[in-house]
Length: 303
Length: 315
Image (tube, rainbow over all chains, first blue to last red):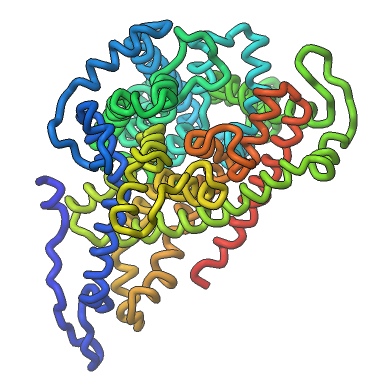
């Protein structure tokens, strides 16, 4: 509601006379036909984007006989929550209880995100608000690192983690996530917009550098750290653990989803139930922070 | 008197050193380096050092059990001259990248552009709808149920019901349709960070630029786009391009999830799939590193090319 009030009311098609010519103010270049076509296209593509979500939700509440129905139906006739309870029964026969996968994913995501938030925001603060030799070089290195997929370095990473003795522990997934590049990049770009005078006045009042960072800079870049949390959360929440962890008790929820779906048609219902669980959490988080994320991305450009 | 002059001189010299010599400036910035240290130690450990190690291993034969043996360019020569699957992987990656890269990028921009003109509340919902596939990550596996080749596959069911096909298509094992399936899923799942960047870039454009443009005689939305909108959001365009290149060239998980690994006749085998094959399955780390180094070079080269192209926008 508050947001709506901010948008100025625009008088459509107001005709103004400037220099003898009539000029239509505001959107002189939109045709009704074009607007309708665009709306139709957006709705069509929007339905395509939502299709798998609706299908997953619908499948997750289908009773067994409807999952096997031919021809397959999109929507469930007699919705049931059996699949969610079956999930715990199916998975209780496996090596570790299903709740362990949930715990692993939540734990890895929480630790990785918190560590990344602190480390990246501290580095971003120095890069954005301090002058020192090597500053450009250090930031350019991060931009270059954004430009290639992480798979490029996974073999040496595997060897480094194995050398540290971190393979097959939470550390292998959590610590490298501290230094992911996206968060630092967004944070630094956003902090550039923070008025230097704000930091200066705090320094004159006798605050040390850490206080300036913690009590002045951080509270003023809330959109940036919310965005950082969203991005970090998204990548960690969806990690399967890859080759870095191989014991079943350290495997994550997306890995469990893979395993269940590999079980074939009989597991479709349970698989969809997991998929629904996996997707709901990040989507809700994004919904709550959307305007902050968009605000942060506005300063995301590479110049 | 003379001592006062001497101390003054010394102080000036010290100030001069502080300001102008590199070492002086480094000593002055201790606090900054302390802030940077925790992040950059890990960054060097898990990004910079691995890149260097990869380059070194790419010139060696290394199977983890024995020490790496230097073999010069042999890995690269083998890749291009004796490895048919790698050549196929390059082809697949480029077909995939040429379609999903530019198309995905363009689609992300066009949707962001259209969505930007909607009223704020509708806009917020539409952004959520378009961004949801990216943020929910692994949920693309639901597509593998929908594309399933047996009679439970919903897409086959619908197409048969409509009479478009009369027997089930094996979407994920028929070499004719596998790439199509992967491209559809990739387009669905990868509008991503680029899309958000476009949306934010569009919202950041100064409205007065448009007013000025109308007075100067811009008459349709295409001219407005080319002369005002695009040049005003170049930094965001570049950021989105970087994201798009990274994700299309890193594609492999979608292929594995949809078509299995290795896929039938290597029909959707990408460069990263090939890398995983040698890294995880065969433990030929030197050879796998050579693939990684080529991929690294291709990504950086392409990024530079795109940056140069984007400089020409709006001129």
